[in-house]
Each structure stands twice: as C-alpha cells, then as structure tokens.
Image 1 (cartoon, rainbow, N blue to C red):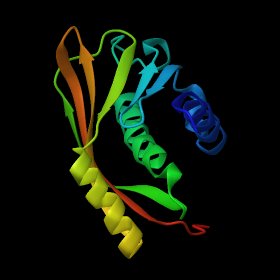
Image 2: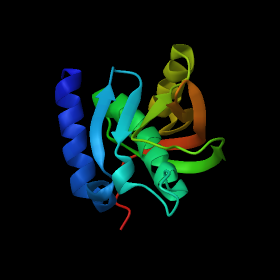
Image 3: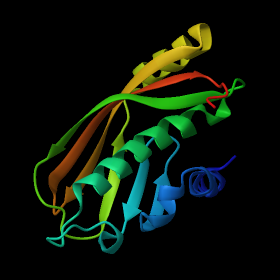
Length: 155
C-alpha cells in the first residue's frame, strides 16, 4: 500500500475509533513510511492566552507517537495493539500559530530490533520523541515509551 493510501486509511481509523480526533483541528497528516507528522490548527487547540493548550499538545503528541508505531506495524502478518507505557512532556516556549507535531523515530537498527522482539515475544517497547518546532526553535517535546503486543479484546 502506498503512503497516501496509508494516510487516508489511518485518518479514517482514528476519526472512527478515537472521537477526540474529530475535534483536534487536523489540517494535514504526513507520513513518509517512517516518521509521522500532524498539522493542527491553533484555532481548535488554544488556551485562554491564545497559545496552544498544553493538553492539546500532549494529546496530539501521544496520538502522533501511537500512530507512528501503528503505521509501522501495519505490514506485519500478526495484528498488534499499541499502548502508551509512560511519557515525559517539556514545554519550552509558547506555541503561537498552527503547529506541526513531528515524530522522531529511533534509528533503523533500533526499529528492526523492536519488530524482531515483537515477533519473537509478542510484546516489545519502543521509545520515541515528538516535537513542535516554531521559527526554528523547539517549543514542545514529548518523549514516550510505547508497548506493542499481540491484539486482544480489551473490553
């Protein structure tokens, strides 16, 4: 499947299964087969000061990281669930306009080791970062650990 089709399928998935995404002001989604980025409108995500709301940045970053790993695993024979294990948020500067959340995936060797562990054990952890860069400066950084595991019924 080409990346354009993957993005469209992914966007339908998140809008159907994660209702919050219908209110997050998505302007665009970019995926190059490795890194995922969301472009979100400040209008839907601002606080009382007119800058990006911390909760919106956190939710967007969590979703972006989850999405990057979910897309990475789409080609696997076995279906997997991806969940957040823990995260750290850093707010360095206010975000003052429409913003882009950009994943920073691990090096290819680390991704290969993650996928191999997942295939062998049915569970593996992947650490990644998501950043918002404005005017050449990092305004926000999310560092998260995600766990992928064999799909199961959670209800």
